[in-house]
Length: 108
Image (cartoon, rainbow, N blue to C red; front, side, top):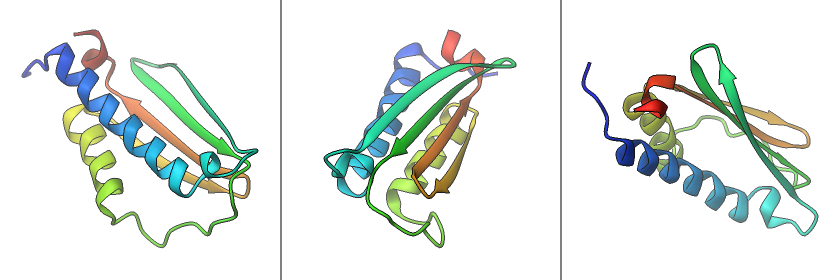
């Protein structure tokens, strides 16, 4: 297996967080005065799981598909560079994005 340098893993994760934060400021919880954002993480088996939870933003419908540039960027970064997965859950109170990253990528 080809080893990913730690700085590449950190850069990839920073890119994903920046994209999620940008969307939150433009359209989600951080665009509202009383919106809340919780980012938490932990281990899920051998993987690292990060859960991005937004609440209190404007009511927006769930997108028909995640085909925009930012969504593709997040998915490709998590899946291809970090050997993980990303899931989106569009709840009534806000978006919940779960990032699951191969634990070996985080410990190199």
